[in-house]
Length: 224
Length: 224
Image (cartoon, each protein chain N blue to C red):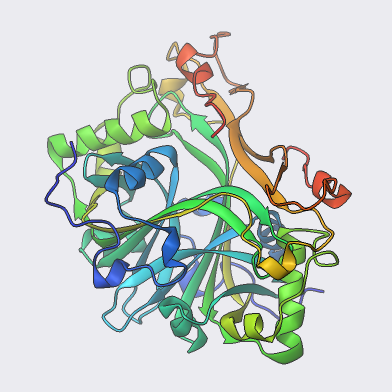
């Protein structure tokens, strides 16, 4: 359930998209669908010297927040755990756009940027979050894999970032050449980029020839 | 040509990988190959309030630096142009790793993180950079597309980030389950994730049925 009291994406000073504003999308549902389609987010936090770091994390959306985890031993994650200002961005690349001019040539993509501060989850919240993250990244796996023990839980930092302040950007469709360029005698169009799952590769140390589970075979998603 | 006087990746205090250090790679060639295989980098810069922003950019490697461009109207790019501390990260997702335990389950990926400050390119350097970026993202296209005119050049900010301080991380291979978990009666292994080009889609406003160029058809890359 979306909390309808949350601000519209792109409506705050910090999330107003000034560059190519016609690509901005103002509905949360589109942003949430983008988050649900991705696996990896890039998060940034700043150290004491003002240096930002950008690291990839696996994540999952859970209602009006994003969940992700990292190591308690990581400098970056300690900063996030302390509630330092952070940014989390998810970008799904959909295609190369070949306009007649290099200036109008670009990429089609779907993107979400979230600003805020993370909060550390503990106890039942932490257990729930680990299940949600596993079931987003590896749907079906939670019921078969061994769940984390206390030592593993202690080594894992689980964070939530509220989807309060966010922007959503969509770049799609054919090239938008200037009128003067359209007659240029060259092909123009879009070359889609598609991410797909390949053939599962069994671990070399399987003690018996267990078949690839149906839930893994079901991951082959339809083309976008 | 790699400048052999540059520091080894991961050798500075800020780029030493503490989390799962066995995944660190110390040779520049591996890092450069990762940069050459990617299309989108995530860059972060910090505003006056200490808030980091992470945005996706198309980029290309040019020797010992990374080139990318943005709009002169973008707040983020103005910060980058002023030489504020930045981070540029490229992540290539290669597969889902299904261990018998959720704790050891993860993703296989190749990643590069670069720290430094950008510098603005002008004149011939800028023209060269735009050709290098186009030829990395759309190989073959520079000779056919219309090059930027003065107005378009003025609207485009082109930045270079030296590959001086960087870290390189590789996560590959089968799951590394604890010995106690290996006998668990469940399939384990890796499900590869592959990014491929789909069927080119011609622009609806093509004035004649120009064929898809051979250089576009050649983009279909071999599986990793």
